[in-house]
Image 1 (cartoon, rainbow, N blue to C red):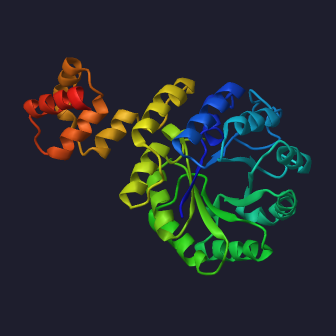
Image 2 (cartoon, rainbow, N blue to C red):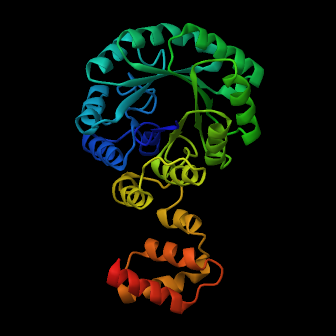
Amino acid sequence: MINLLENTLRDGSYVIDFQFNKQQTADVVGGLQGLGFKMIEVGHGLGLGAWNNPKCGLSAENDEAYITAAKKVAGDAKIAAFFIPGIGNEDDIRAAAANGLDFIRIGTNINEFRKAKPFVELARSLGLMVAVNLMKSYAVKSYEFSRIVEEIDSWQLADVIYLVDSAGCMMTQEVDEYIDRTKQRITTELGFHGHNNLSMAIANSIQAVQSGATYVDTCVRGMGRSAGNAQTEIMIWMLSKMGIDMGVDLYALYQFADEVVVPAMTRMQGLSSEEIHIGVSKFHSSYMPFVNKAVEKYGVPKKELIKRVSDINCLNPTEKLFDEIAEKISNYG
């Protein structure tokens, strides 16, 4: 089973200087839950305890506000938060658990992984699902990564251990090597968190799944620190191409991204829904004038028209075909 941990409200908060408010949090969580997402991370980009630390960047709300706003609309989705020892403390974890947090991810630089253990123990004692995020995983060789993960696995405390490409610098063969050689030695599930600095976040996330990771992080519109994260909309489609149905309607996700997430962004990241849909549909953009004319004439949804025409003829569709399909959509849906 593949689990997508939706990070728009946490890692994506870097894009807007951590200024998601309670209402936006509720709108995004409610929208994601309604679309079928089961795990949603909220809060300051640097995790619990960072919200009032000037060195981290002050957020619009405190930890309690983010968690409670999310929980009110989460339904059956699990609400997660991030935690870095030294930025947050034990009281922050206790308060988060008391406010209804379901899942905590405890992150350290990979060379400091043992600092995570007491916080993992505390989180487990509070009944939280726990992940260990090995930030900057690429700083060690794959065999060293495996040894570290084996030690964490021996704690028998974590539900997931994450390979983290914090700089967006890894290649797919590296992701495969780190995950494949490690999964054979442990019982704990593996996850992957990738950034997009070399435009590899999606490719690496797909490779992680193919190599045996069962948790992958994504953000709507590819929002996230630096160059951003693997884009949720693309990952949903690519997983479906691999035969993995996440139960999310892509057209509804496009609409959610355009109407709820994009208006909150102060700078753009990722690809637009139209750009993605051109790839999804195998549609050559040179035919867009035909699309626009048919949409204007018949008042039909552009993305549906593109897909239905391309499903018939993606090589050289005629203006007549666009008109015929648009008329059918208009008359019969």
